[in-house]
Image (cartoon, rainbow, N blue to C red; front, side):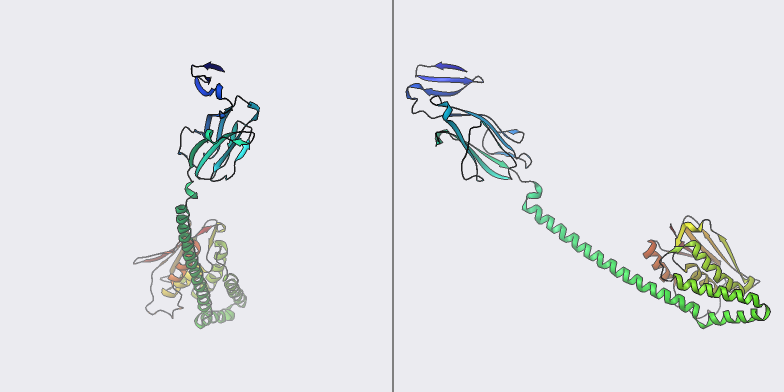
Length: 358
């Protein structure tokens, strides 16, 4: 590099168009080593003065420097530390220092030259720096997070308890429905009417009586087989209804007329014994004669099953089985998330049931 000598007996050295060091050659034995800082970075930000603040992800410290000692250049060494992390000085011969992954906080970086292990504090370079903590590293964030987590856990417990209560209520409702189904079919009036019909058929046509007994047996077997199932195929439900229709036809003959419009029943699921219960409900509350038959229409429209009958209300109703449409609606709501709907006018009574596709 360039050198110059002035009238005060000082020799100056210049690098990068600026004076970097001056020494009095007359007192060279007493002069201190010089230290020049070229660059200092925190992450990608260059440091020029004290109290430099950076974000949490700019936490790599780099410093590039060099020292000058004209008497014994080969003896020149350096010591540095990052306070308060480092309490002891770290010695090095390198002219580049990298301290990576500094945790957030306030620090003071120090570096000084040494000769033969003797430090020169007069030439010590210091810089104060500050690294901000990430939002998730702050205390208030963890208090906030703990509050949110506690609230969510509380809501989870509330929802879980509510769900358990709903499941228990559904189980109770299901058991009640199963009991009502069995009661409705095993009650003395149903059996009495069925056996009376069977006796009259036996006298007239024994072979037909055998068929009726088989249908009656199939009907009760299907009730017991599917009473534990939450859903069965619509095709299976229609087979159970066929057995029930056969028994009704033997009792009422042409007084009850069924009409169906169902395509691809294998594609849909339904709660078991729904059709039988709703058909029984129509027969129970309406008159059915040859001159004024009871029409029961069953058809599918847009993933919903419709059961529709003409109204011919009885003047005296038969004893109730205590099975309500509200109970059936609750089961559909719990299992399919949809309720059945009831529409009634002067002439017709219609129930629409949600179906589930397989």
